[in-house]
Image (cartoon, rainbow, N blue to C red; front, side, top):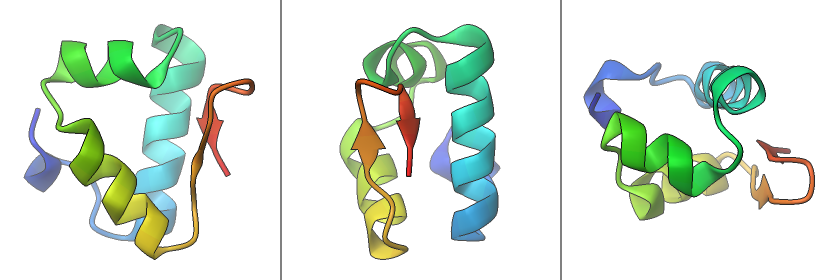
Length: 61
């Protein structure tokens, strides 16, 4: 999966990533490794919209 296959809208992107984190992955590194996503690019996209990864909650907020 590439960033181009994920929703472009930042809120939809955050929602999709959080759902995957909640249902399938124990942390962001596992999700990125499995889906072959660049973690830095994903975090940068979500950061631009004001979201950051909270490892203790395993979600973006």
